[in-house]
Length: 164
Ligand SMILES: [Zn+2]
Image 1 (cartoon, helix red, strand yellow):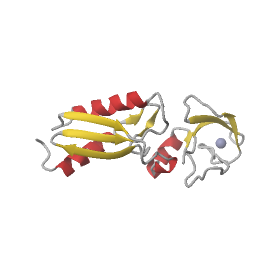
Image 2 (cartoon, rainbow, N blue to C red):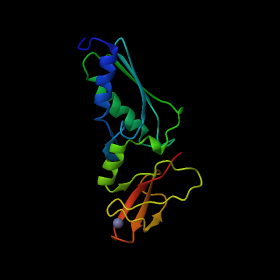
Image 3 (cartoon, rainbow, N blue to C red):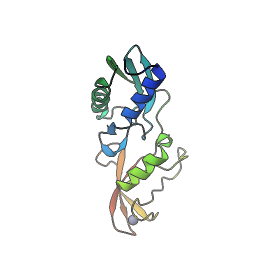
Image 4 (cartoon, rainbow, N blue to C red):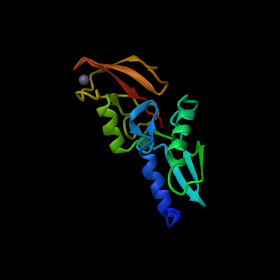
């Protein structure tokens, strides 16, 4: 086996997972989205616990296949087991700082940090940072994204809904 300890192998798995992109947002990895809950390696069997961002998101099966494909070819991996777990629940606060920067570069506004239920959802434009935005369509191309329009720079953009 190429890796001496299971800690080293788990580290290798995390590195590979950083290359697995969110199928609906190829700019950002599942690690940056905060979707990988834990990784365990035992005798060449890799178990990955994934926190789905939205229950029933149709991209889940694709995510599972992408993770399996990525890890199955790695040194010393005999089997890959991907499991979706719902505890702890995924919240938009789990998106990493780097992930937020990448989303923005992709023209998607990240959900506000420390959002509480009932708070007004204020979205800043990912292009010009103006808060002067208008919700065009709460349900955008995916259930988890909305379409907004910036009244300042006049660009339409998408925003990820805050989940807490
Ligand atoms: Zn703008």
